[in-house]
Image 1 (cartoon, helix red, strand yellow):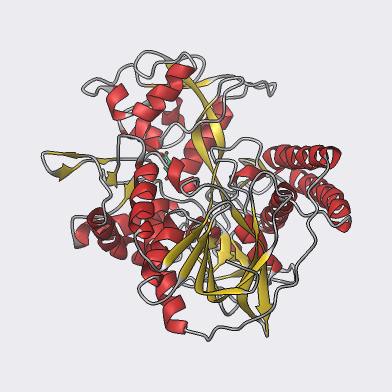
Image 2 (cartoon, rainbow, N blue to C red):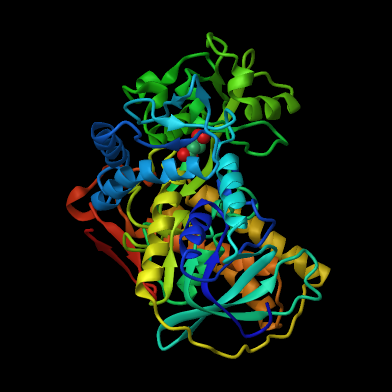
Length: 535
Ligand code: SIN
């Protein structure tokens, strides 16, 4: 690919949404999929528990819909949830035909249950490596398509617009050493942002290092509206061991019978929700946060307990989790496993319609980067892989149907300037400061004062980064820091504007749900104004 190259469709991101879209698009045009690391390194790859899908006909679909709507705490956009539940089975059957292998016994797909699901409907692969299997099968299927090219280790530095439409993107190699990297402009009939979420905006996250919200930031910079950014889901059970990463301990563990216990050995969920450990994720996360603190505010351990679970070889059922715990001296079948919540999934994102269209012509979004309203204020467990499949395919169909002509624009090549070591350090410090501030100010429990404090820190971080960009620096880490800052700003502003508690957004100063004013979605427009809308 050279400067000024062109392609019919550009897909940014190679997780489940981007790959599913690419397969659809490749039936009718040339597709370029760009991903800033190796192919396969995405949030999709790390998804453990499974993919929620109603494979048993109409009644099953209706129940999946109701569970999705109920988990979303009053603001799920029902047509989006209907689409997800109804089109999900077709997309999963298709995936199986293309080579995805879900766990089975005697030819029957195995199903597990997770929080807020009324029945066991979650398919899984290799026990606890469902995302890796979906990613593997989609990559393998897409690779044989002649019309799909992949550009790994390539990042988008900006979207190119002309006459209020997105007509392409500037790309740069994203290898660790960017010295030889030259920006390239690629023109396209349509661009899909499917670059996933932004867990790295928080200091404690289950997300991999790539989840820096780049696609969301790029779209916002180009004028795309963002929606529901205050709704960030915290997974209740990440490993809580000093020195260990916040490794995800799948909700499927609770689906298979794990209890939660406080440091007095009490099974405390009975005080919080009738569904106990399988209550909606936001409820469980806040319960753990409460139990994990004494009256003086000191941290106390909370544990996941599977010691009583018999009838399963837990190491076989959860091989990845067991292996990770073993490396840290813990055994799922014998030990209490210390847990605490960590940032996991962004329900908000680039606002789209049900076909992935944004408010900017030529720009589409799908998957975690997008917000269709399907999750409302709290995503139902294991709905995200299905979301990527269903809305990735739909976005591709819209890109094909809208069919604008290709516009060619010459590339303005920016001079390269990787960061000297002191500036590299400065960027890392800024990121760490922002992540800590987001965790304390816009985490599980928020209030006006904390959110304002978070905004002040975010502004200081922005200022430090602006000083570097004014020096003409051009570097992946600097760009990621800017993406995180932009996403943090959107989360903080949206969280301040929603003066109620709903789903994953809990305000200590407004602890009640206020349907009269806020049974609505927040929309952050290109001028930085927030409005609340009924969808
Ligand atoms: C998990 O395995 O608990 C995560 C699944 C999800 O986030 O939906």
